[in-house]
Structure formats: structure tokens, C-alpha cells
Image 1: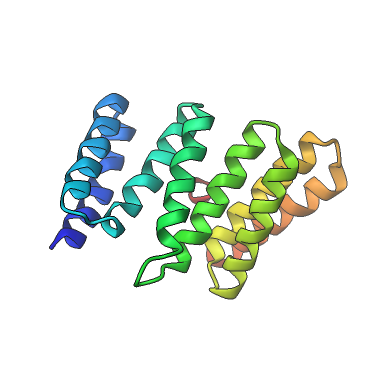
Image 2 (image 1 turned 120 degrees about the vertical axis):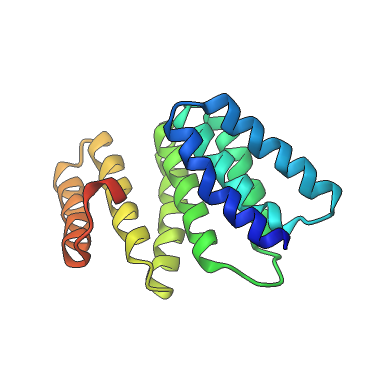
Amino acid sequence: TTEIYTLSLHDALPILWNDGDHELAMNYVLENIKFLDQRQETQAQVWLYWTLGVYNYDLKNYDNSIKYYDQTLAIVRVMTRYNPDLEGWTLLGLGTVYRAKGLHQEALQYLEEAKGFSKKYNQWMQAARIHFELGNIKLAQKQLAEANEAYLESYQIRKHYQIGRAHV
């Protein structure tokens, strides 16, 4: 089915991306969005839009990243099979992008909303990343005690679940 195809694509794309073949990976995602659009499979596109949000963030194309995360959010919020995990990761992504742009108020709004999702749905890896990003914001604002507290919370979550820093 299209859903299995999309999930397989979602698993294969990081291989291209991590090998440094960014243009090929981006084009592959965009072509598959077009393919799914022709089939009117909007919900199957959701992970692809999220992936474009991540990739554009990695390339520091922050406005494009926001555009694709917003598209992800628009789809995920009307999906017939609602996915709170994806909504939480998308909100975290938006918070991260706004933090990178230096727009801390916007970042905090998205990160706080994401924190609610991670708590409600017990998404501990999201929670660790959210606290890490909150620490980055507090550090940028020269609020060192609050930054340290957020980083420590992120570390405690990772330590509890025995995950390494690469996962955050």
C-alpha cells in the first residue's frame, strides 16, 4: 500500500542524507510528494513534508523549514488517524527552527506546546530534546542557571532511558 511505501521511503532517506547526497534526497522527497499528490494521498505525504522540514533546517534554510513543518502540522491535525507523536515532533522542529533564527519567544511557544504533547503521550525522547532546546534558548539569553537546569533535565531523561547524546 501507499502507507507502507511511504514508511519505507522514510527509512531509506536518511541513508542518502547521511551520505551527503542532499540534493538527491531532497529531489527524491519532492518527486514522491508529487506522486502522492497525483494519487490524492495527502495523509501519506505527511512524513515527507516533515522530512523536508528537517532537511531544510540542517541546510540552514530556516524559512523553507518552517514552511514544510507548517504543512506537516496542517495535515497531521486533520488526519483521520491522528498521530500525536508526529505533531509533537513537528512542534519541536518548529521550536528548534525559531530558536536557530533567534526568535526566542516564538521558539518557546512551540517548545512549550511540544512539551505538553511529550508529557501527555509519554514521549521521553521528545522531552529530552525539548529540554535541550530550552537550555539553548536560556543560554542565548544569558540565563545560565535556567540553561543549566534545562540541560540537566535533558541529561536526566537520557540517563534514565540509557540513550546517548546522538539521540537528542
